Length: 373
Image (cartoon, rainbow, N blue to C red; front, top):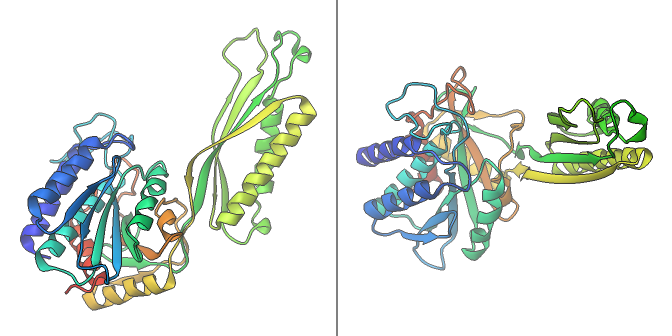
């Protein structure tokens, strides 16, 4: 990678880190990235899509189109470590490394602009990855631009520093946030028999969750995590009569996630009918399974070998979800990982900061995937 381009990409990463924005609030971030590309490139077209944007390098309609994606939203986690590029926004910071992902993609765009490529390239800068909505909305671009293949990477702690990691098949589990609202009827605390209290039904659901997620019932990993239990109010004269149980359900296979969801819904609905409770369900933060395509993963392996980067194979998918899976449902592609180090602080923690050394590796991997030296 050109030394000047690496310096520019690193400076960009630091600027993004100092000005983090949450999902659907990334107005400054998006515009800063657009301004950066407009200032430092001459052969790349910018397409502004509102919440997100993408850039295009075009060589001709008769050539394949390959997309590369980076996310740019931050997390509601305060910056507690002392950095020269410390977050200026209280309570918000880039604790997942999306600043580094975007800087990598921008650095790649500089390399393509200056050195050229023999195929059409889409540089997709995506919003709202942390909520799972960004991928849904950006997927329209895949159809509009007739993308043939897509690639992306994530920095990851707990694995070898600067090594490239890949996995065949499922790379990230599917997941969704599930809220079960149960509404009975109120009664004086001295006469609870006159009302309908959903506490017992909610307790029954919680008690049954280990059975519903028993490994013997599924082929792949299935998890159900209790996020919140909110029943009644702090009023000692009124028996609880409404409540919400919030869960995150997760599975290696999307079909098994749907099966778990149905089992929980069936149990809650049955308890509601038996006890005279109105039951309703709400879902948010829905992520698909992220399933790599064999041909594309093999290309990542080949590029890593040519670039002489350490290549490692993951033995199981990451439990955390990724909205990148929406793209892989539409076109072939792959998602790979670059290591922060086995003992480096994990993403989504106070101590984490993206490692600038990874930028060049990401850019070189992207260059290799489009056939650039």
